[in-house]
Length: 429
Image 1 (cartoon, one colour):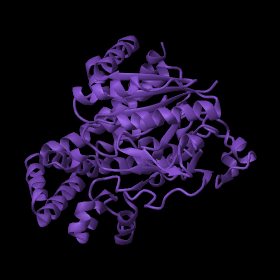
Image 2 (cartoon, helix red, strand yellow; image 1 turned 90 degrees about the vertical axis):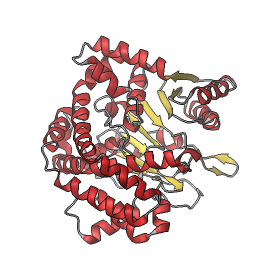
Image 3 (tube, helix red, strand yellow; image 1 turned 60 degrees about the horizontal axis):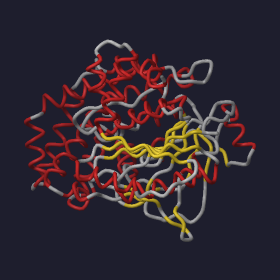
Image 4 (tube, one colour; image 1 turned 90 degrees about the horizontal axis):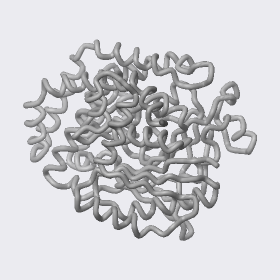
């Protein structure tokens, strides 16, 4: 029986999402005969977590589904034991990278990867607490419908079964390593207000995540497709394609990875940085690992916390840290693309040592590009005025620290990647 981990990391109240996810777990077990470990990694406040506990207690029994609801203390205890068993140097640093005190989209998913290994799962299927399932003909549209059939199996089997394919036949022997779709609804990054206030400023700021040497046309095209997902059109029928999945076409609220990807390579553990959890989508694409791109998109919405002044300030800081991270990741992505299938060993598995080399090379890059990015953000946010100007003041006061932090984030990622095989093995035991 195929054992899978259907995972929900959360730091906010989401009892309705837990109930909906449990229904998807039941669908996976009933439709595909999967053994589903529904994993809720709960970093919410005491009141919200108590609500989650009640929601879990109210879930009806479903054959083939086991629910694991772990608060941060339980997660920390598991991580301490894994780090201790791995016998790695700097254990406190590793524990901090796996469970930092600040928000980390990569770290919460890394914890899911380790726990999935401990639970003996063959794949991880991630959802988010600020998203919901579409419905069609009165039934929820579950992404697991396209995730489960082919993950881990040779791409040739999917093609032989009639799945539409854009895959080079020379890659058909490789395993299907990811399956994903996107979202409909609000922008995945909370910058819609910026676009409403000043379209020109919006283009200037969003364009900063392109490489510094991008042409005006390339930058404009990137801005037009950034953070928009699959638009707003609702689901009307299934479409799925086997190929090399473009990272711009999938979202981390709607994705699944086979263990041969995430047990070889973690995600960047950077704190307060949006987009820090997308690295494996780039890696699978550049390493020429097949994937399934489908259209069971999830509905994205914004939680009220983002609308508060404190939430706005925190989120804008995370967005700017994402822009700064691109100095390093553009270098790494370019190196991975050039390496191509050389990123895989003779068993078609990712070679993390190659990625570590690219990461460490990137930390020697000139920071001038990031200084330029901070200058452009400062000008843009002050032009918008109001609370954007307050963000600009905060960023100006933290400028040197932000530049340092962006580089240290890459060093931390390299360090965690080197430790990852031992952590995975320790988690299994």
